[in-house]
Length: 281
Image 1 (cartoon, rainbow, N blue to C red):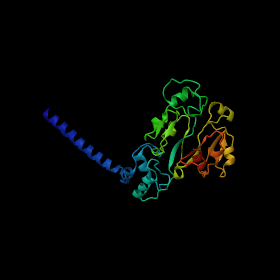
Image 2 (tube, helix red, strand yellow):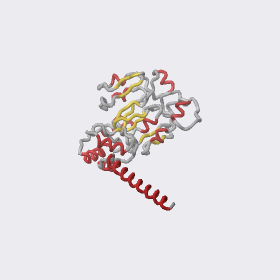
Image 3 (spheres, rainbow, N blue to C red):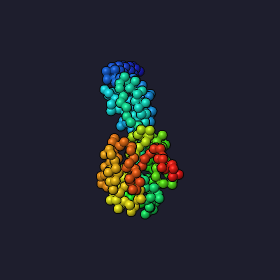
Image 4 (spheres, one colour):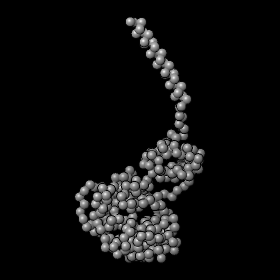
């Protein structure tokens, strides 16, 4: 009995040793060696893991940078050009510069310009409200004001303004990750270039209703009058479905459109006050 037990133990031990050797050689044969440059790239990335670059996270983005022949299609919005230059140095590749972007709100329908017609008392979520209720104002395109964009922003760059009822974007904190854009069910948040000296011009409206209908529900809504189109010397503005849109690639920031807009829905950001405005004050 003792000899049988001893034989069994020796057999199992020998079999275990053989299997261990086999597994070792199999592991060596199919071993995947990770490029050490991946860790080097990860070290210079912001570590936000926000997915703004199109990858699942910073490590996936680092793998993409390492495995790509060029960095032409690789860009980290959070780190910007400075971080991409560091990545380029690590990999010995050329990084292409991109214009800094910032999120803008394409809605000027503050509480004093867009009258509430109903009272919504459901879940405090723009997405839920949009799917089951639509809107508590006469405008079906405007901001719902429940702050899904605030929740989505991982950089504390958006706060709801209790006076206007609209989200305010801190351009110094905004990393153009695009999380707020994806979170907004009304698609009224957009990433646009910050512009030279952080100056930009854009239409703060997303309504596609006819002008007369828009005026009934919001005093700051675009009425599609095309005065801005006629005033722009660079053909940067087009009106489609009763809504004006400024092509930032063509816009030269002359602001002639701002001057002629009868409803003042074209915003000019970070421009110095004009002399006549200062004199009037």
